[in-house]
Length: 401
Ligand SMILES: Cc1cc2nc3c(=O)[nH]c(=O)nc-3n(C[C@H](O)[C@H](O)[C@H](O)COP(=O)(O)OP(=O)(O)OC[C@H]3O[C@@H](n4cnc5c(N)ncnc54)[C@H](O)[C@@H]3O)c2cc1C
Image (cartoon, rainbow, N blue to C red; front, side):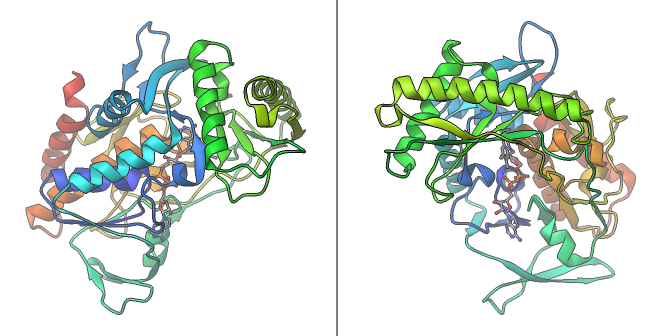
């Protein structure tokens, strides 16, 4: 098995694949495993719990999702969940997620990780993907099954697979980006940002800060001299549109208030930030829709009831059953997708781009891909696929029933 991309989806796919007994190669573009959280300080894991007004939070998937929560809780790297509007969100120490990815991968005997790689070329024939070539390495990498967990479907793009990628006003991020500057302070380093991060988590946990600040992400050092938080205010539902002035105004007011709350807390608690101020506060609607790969089924909002080939659940924004066919490319029978690039229509983008969705669909793709690879068959009939899906579903969702 080859898994391309080592974010939450890729790491979960590699773990799932090894645990089904397949030798697995995980290709990481960067030195650190864990994906986006390595470049940003992200304080929450969203999309792990089914939304609802129940008094008790309900985990959507067990498996790797449950393992991440329990291990983070046990080693002091996470806590919660807290309820933000209608969603339960797990709070975590940003660095702990990346460390846990490293630790879990290091335990898998069947796993090899190659870091700092770049995919140069993908060779295909009528049977599927034959091999990939990595930059600065003349030896082709061959595999029975390839999993694309590269966020923007880079492996699939290079293979010529059909992509789905409409950019629409609705598919844009409703993020509030601002800059906190301190005229007299040094440029922020990891230590200061770690301190800010810990204060955000403690403030949300103690009720001192608005829980929406748990959705505040801070860019890691290297992005300039100021502290640059982004507050992802993706709680407007699926109807948020940047073409609607009232949406942008609402985002602006909410974002400004949250920024002011964070500024006041930093002024009072961090001596080197006692004169800090919010210097820039535009509502930034920028593209968030990434490419997805056309699968044997394109997942849509209608897929809320489980089928014979359901492998896991998407939880963020409402429960959706994910069928194995949405993880399998329509063009190449040995290509599977996980995380943000799985086969789904554009309306589901906001529900795919959270860590819970990446972990669950990653594990599902890894386990399914390994089972297909180990079956020794080039193509499976629908009955065999259902047998595999049932087994995967029992591993991921079963323990919760
Ligand atoms: C600003 C921001 C805020 C966010 N806030 C939250 C939040 O509050 N809560 C939450 O749950 N989630 C949040 N997320 C989303 C979350 O961090 C991830 O996007 C999500 O976990 C999806 O994971 P992924 O594995 O699909 O993608 P990613 O985490 O993006 O990982 C993809 C990986 O693939 C690698 N890659 C790309 N191309 C190649 C290639 N050609 N070869 C090899 N590797 C490649 C990338 O380097 C990366 O490591 C946020 C994301 C952003 C950007």
